[in-house]
Length: 333
Image 1: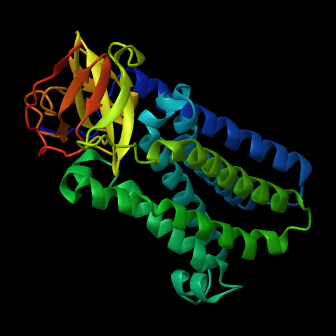
Image 2 (image 1 turned 30 degrees about the vertical axis):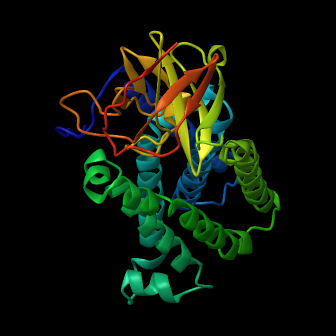
């Protein structure tokens, strides 16, 4: 992807992922409309469609925000993370459809410009929804790796962290809008449960990550004791922290250390494996040669490397990083 760009690099996993998304969305909308028409005979199809699209988008947003911490808690959720951007773009399209149908239904047939009417009527809850939609649009429009490469991973990641602001705006949109008109408490309960779920999930994931961010004790010469050689499985890594996390990999009877941060989206390289001689990020499959931190040609990504040594059966790493892509002689087991 850093060499040439395609709209979508389709493979079997992506097709299955997207087919599941579309099928689940269609089933949800059909069930919502069917049940709504059966239980609310006075409701119009337009009103039910607005509610169906809104709840579908909100449920998808909860799933999207849950995938990250779930993947940190257990690797079985990593396949969901791999194509999460597909789910995010679909969620934006559904939210946009909700906004357009609502705009036509409530503001398109009056004497006032629909956008003016949208922003000046009611309790102002529409403004929060519109602001959230703008954020989701920016995220969807820049979701491709083309923008990741040209904006830089840091700027791209900061932009896409705006999803949390969008979520907060959507909660305000719901609280000042739908909850004011809904007499039954089920919607309020579901909204509160969603907030508690996401907050609790992120806190649990953060607490689990916290021990890895404690700086490891240094020896007198400044090196860090990683542990016994046998404690590092072949083809895998042990992660230590020295301000930043360092991944020490064991492979083919050798030991090499690289930065734990993937250049693509900041994935944890130390949680990946050495595949075909390359350190492979568990998030999206980006690869680096363990001896020099460089992606194999024709790719150009590079990560920092570190000196490694073995003394009396224990592995030590020098926390002073070399420049990204610097070759370092591996330590031998």
